Image (cartoon, rainbow, N blue to C red; front, side, top):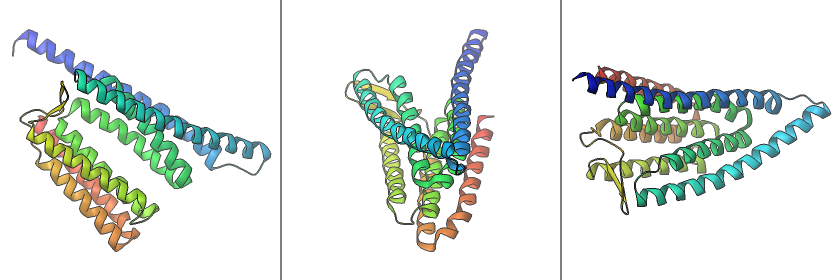
Length: 256
């Protein structure tokens, strides 16, 4: 590798790191907002001022849920249109992720209160970690981590909602659709095509084995927790965290 190639690679790595740090900064801001919600919406007192503040925050969360849902729909449609034209849909994709994150935060907090907020305190840093994985690691690790993260989310819903309820079923459906999409992507050598637009989501030489294994692991632990009981979900959460750590070690060693 000559000097120009090393310099180009260094600049590319710097750009990737800067993009990842932007997501980390957004996660820090969102964590701060969650702290405020915890202080003034969850742990409130019985004074008139505190109750009025709770009602105002609740109204804001309801409004945020509907606005973020509308924004998510618009951004997804925009992204599909851009992909069909030229394959360049970075901006609508980023905005769709941001809208989806706000939608999930507001909905979970409104429906699960303190348990949902505690989950958000963990999920927001997880989103930032996924951004680091996306920009700094192999794409195979990113998709394996996303699928494993959905497994963790499914276990949480088994424990805090209902083993066979709507939320758990929705997570399983998303898992299946995402894995099916990746299977079709494998047939196209990692190239996603919509209309005239093309976008490479995975390198042609990508190894899909751990991606599909992550799907099997996630599906098995959700099914086991759903049919055995919510207490089993508590211990399986640690098993999924261990699986994610094993993936991290494997892909880190692979990069060396």
